[in-house]
Length: 74
Image (cartoon, rainbow, N blue to C red; front, side, top):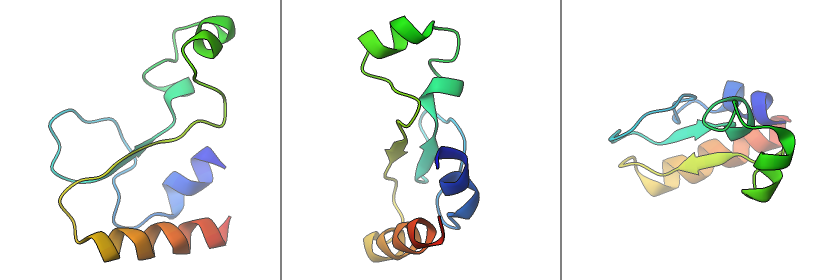
């Protein structure tokens, strides 16, 4: 699901970014927490199905529509 969602959103940027004004979606277990062991990730509350969705400055309804469409495709 995590990679499928990132591939299907059209407005949200599927990458890591700090200070971005755009919305972002990432899979922490393979990006920001990828060097941790599974046990360390679980202790931090990060599972294989965890998705980080950071909302940016886009129109809220556009983001909702984009996410709903992407989830429906999965």
